[in-house]
Amino acid sequence: MQTAGLFILGIYLLIMVSIGVLAARFQKSTTDFWVAGRGFGAFVLAVAIMASIMHGGTMVGGTGQIAAMGAITLNNLSFALGFLVVLFFMAEKLRNFGGFTLPDFLGERYESNSMRAFSAFVILVTATVSLIAQTKSMGIIVQNMTGLSPEFSLILATAIFVFYTTIGGMMAAVWTDIVQWAFMMLGVIALSVGLLPHIGGFSAAAQAAEKAAPGWTALTGIGWTPLSLFSWYFVWFIAYFTRIEFVTKMYTARDARAARLGTAWGLILILLFINFMVYFGAAARVLIWDKIKSPDQALPALMATYLSPFWAAVALSGVAAAAMSTVSSLLLLSGAAISHDFLRKSYFEPKGIHKSEGYYLAISRLTLLAVGLIALLGAFKTPTLVLTIVSYAVALSGAAFAMPMLLGLVWRRTSPAAALASSIGGFLGSAFWAIATEMGYAWAKVMHPIIPGFVISLILILTVSLFTPPSSKETLQKFFPA
Amino acid sequence: MLGFPADTALILIILPLILALFQVGYSYWKRD
Image (cartoon, rainbow over all chains, first blue to last red; front, side, top):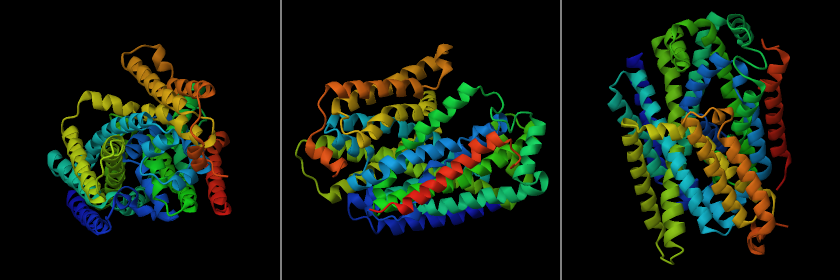
């Protein structure tokens, strides 16, 4: 497998570097760099959304968890509902607003630099820790695929994505997403074809899994209670419409129609892709469940056992591609939070210091390079704190952004003071609950930290809005035309 | 059906798919 792995990695590397170099030629301004000149059509957008949301961990962890806890663990419904929120309430307005980042939108909608800075802070924390964790797992996948040393695998893989993202910006990240998506699809199809003779089709696999583990196909799965299952779906529903790498892609659409279509087709691509995980989960449960030590080994073990060395390398390169398409998006988020939201919008421009586009472009690239280096160092020697925060990153950003984002676009009355209180309150509520969970309090384990954070945020935004003045007429005109 | 009991298949596959197709239809139908 390792010769084949090296060969595939070589081809892959060549494609990524060429795309980076090509995209770099289009980078004339920060609009080119952060939102790719706002030129993407619906199909490109759909693929980019799918590839940045699906990461290597979703495939590996998802398959293992489905194998362990039953088919219902796959929360397709949360995806569908989360995308519905984006499509109905956010896609068009975010595109027409036309900022670069989520803090851009929150800062303008609520006429507040504190809101802008606070949201940039939340993004910086959550995106950077996720970036470190994802970079680390990407290194492990490349190592398995090629047999190179762990250090070299990590450095090589990081060098590739930092290179193309730094020189080509959003455009390179999205173009590479398309190639990475092709690798991902090829990988899951290769594994499915390999498994077919051993477990049969979708239906046969599910029935065999039910026989091996009674309850596997049931509505309540294995080890779920109705409440835990409901909150699992609810958590991911909130998480999907607040995924920053998803909503900021709306800015890159050619027009509002492309933003809407990209979202809808992105959902179809995601459903198409992740239903393979149910099939793999069933196969893992039946074929190799006794032979593996942890659920996370389910997917790699299936590939190693049922595919020829060459096809196992192809399938693994799909996982590596999924990891890389996500890290390039996360790198852009962290970099934009520092160089665009903090430096430009919260420091230089409020102080009236004028800098050229060329200056900001250079700063953006330097920032990405620096964040990429931090990700590499963090992946080599990961502080325990980083891994702990990663498992709550979705809760922290979900609770901080769900209400200010959504209500800001659907309810004119949402006031600046309420949005800030709601965002900070939601973030702190989630963080408090997460800390309590980590400290081992039994009451904290009853629900996911996003739920208390979300409830606090909801109460604050509704009540504070009633007692504080709304945004100015001019601002509201921008977000609620006609 | 699909090897699943109907209620699981409904929540896992059919309902999300209907919602997804609706979203695609809506995006084409809505004019600027």
